Length: 127
Image 1: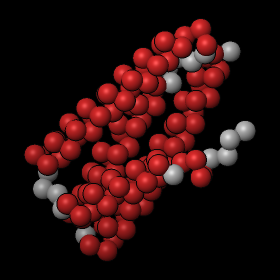
Image 2 (image 1 turned 90 degrees about the horizontal axis):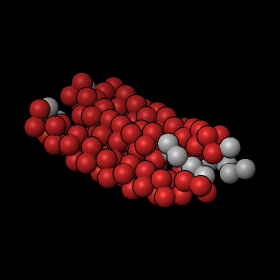
Image 3 (image 1 turned 120 degrees about the vertical axis):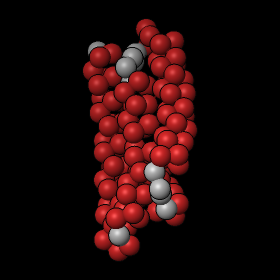
């Protein structure tokens, strides 16, 4: 039963990550089409910085579930959030050091993907 719950929670989290990736991809395409390749790649980098850590969090956080493993559930959520935060910091650092990015599209796409995450309860019907 707990494997089914973990799978259901992980699938819900993956749906959210896919929605974030779709929004980030759409924003990146708009920046690419209107302002050119450098703006599009900068926006794509911002989207990746938002989406990849959330995917890692979803994978780690929903590895355990159930009342018998409540301690493991809490531990994996804390561990997942710590890894997500460190990965976000590392990705921002790598992008700023190694790529010539335009800040506006990078942050617009990053914030757009985060807004999808924050407004997720509006999109998903709970059964």
